[in-house]
Image 1 (cartoon, rainbow, N blue to C red):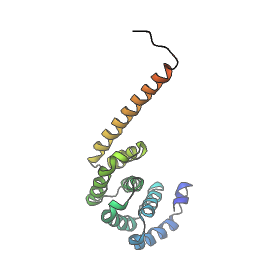
Image 2 (cartoon, rainbow, N blue to C red):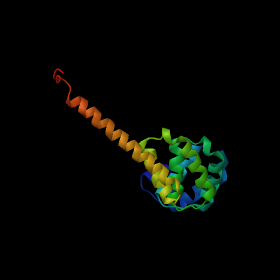
Image 3 (cartoon, helix red, strand yellow):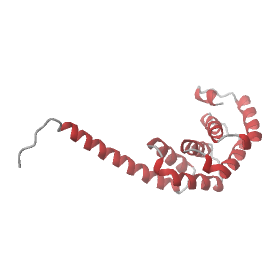
Image 4 (cartoon, rainbow, N blue to C red):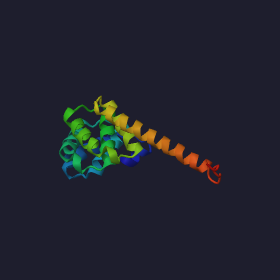
Length: 158
């Protein structure tokens, strides 16, 4: 499914079969498998309700076993297809908030997008985190550029 979605292919019958099979096997899927399948279905805009419902149930129960990337990718995929479940978004938001300080800028940006699409208030938290990180990074770059710009220059005696 991931390869077809990456290539922009939309074999609806194949995805329907994959979705039905994945729904039945959801309890056996690793978080990365759940995230990748959800991403693939969202990317080609195929809402497989049975699969997403089964995946949501697993994600709620096992959110703490998802790594940072899988948390935000899964949340993004569910929000992209318009999945509605307060329980799902609360579980993903709670776990994501606990780990937000370790998120990369890309993960923070994706979290903002995902939770905005889901209309979840935690989007503001992630937007503030991203803004603060961007400001720190810009300040660090300015300091580095200033240091590089003054390299080799002598300071006047005091």
